Length: 135
Image (cartoon, rainbow, N blue to C red):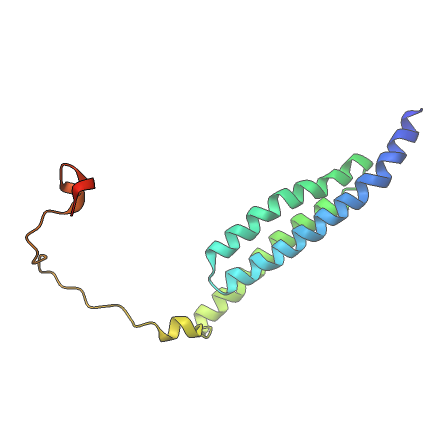
């Protein structure tokens, strides 16, 4: 089998795999951009964390000299992170706050803190010599 034939056979498999990786990476980039707007840093980090292997999967198409899936997935992440940051900045500048969830709205505000020492006379559990017999 010639090298050209092997490359052609691999291209038939690698390019669709790369396109699927680029689609997954694009969806993760979209989630990351929305998460920045909503101030959900954990969600943004998770989306970027999933974007990384998806972008690596999109680079598989490079074995068939098709670099467009990798370029699109990279551009999608950069673009969505920039758009999310700009939208968040505009919302901060105008004083716009997103509505809170019902569970957050029903929760009481912060409980008042007191500067006095605890009134119990017992020794804290972790300071005892044997915490198993802490009763």
